[in-house]
Length: 181
Image (cartoon, rainbow, N blue to C red):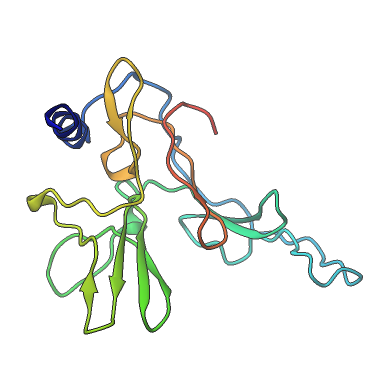
């Protein structure tokens, strides 16, 4: 029990620490938008189309033939990622919600998520509160034998090459820092 608790504390404190250096993500700039013509004989097939991708990434069709989004921008470096708020703070956290009347998940671009129920009013099952060491979910702790590190984009090793893709609900590719794309 004590060893398990010690390992958990070690991993929790490792977020943000340095890991072996790998190639850094190149700055992202969206390319020209394009769309392939839809196949009228196969109406259930998605056409590859980047139109409407925005400043932060690109739409693509994944290996299962479904639409997916590849988040390519570093929101901490891109001026367009900052948004106005009445708190007067610089905000760069972009998020989206998925759910129904009972259960919702709030996904954030830093690699975390929060689960919210509404059975008896709004109740967070894993509210992010860094001061209380509550980090939500959606990421992993990895020990590569040289150093422990965290897969959440917010606490990724610096510098690092990452891959962030959101496929259909329930399946996503989290940041990796192996240098591969």
